[in-house]
Image (tube, rainbow, N blue to C red):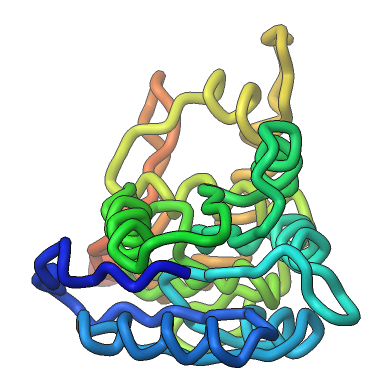
Length: 253
């Protein structure tokens, strides 16, 4: 590895980004760890694929740096496993294999970028900065909207600490809505993106599932989180309004 950190000024880090480095080479670990800490990052190191996989699952991390050739569980298997579990943390793959085909394999496994060894620490830092500047929507492992929390790894949902038991389709539906808070979502959008319909059948499928989801999320007496927008679709609101109690007229004598 070429140590050329002096060629690039240390970037200003607006937040304390946490990076998981999965690398078995002691010297490489020490050089990367030292450079990234100088740049303001918090770094955790895993020396093999199995340990790295468990660390990535527990998180939270803003970025993973994964060596492709690892003892035991290889780097590509680590990445593929995380992606299959819907962990969308950006991943930078490090590898001594520099052929184009090898890079394609690394990216297809779920890597977001690929850096061949040997590399300059300045280039590594630049690639990290580029990955961290990407939109963060898909990186979060827990979504928070108003009173709701959705854990994308544990596949659990809560409202103000109350567990909500969801079926797989309901979970996917809620995730879709929570990624678009305070936005109107049409029935056609839900059929295409949640049910993967390439044609739009005349069906009340969406309304039935939304109804079931609302009964689980909005219990009697709780503020309404999922609103129906008449003639348009639905909206998950980030600041739900409390339900107003119905006024009762006094009985006539």
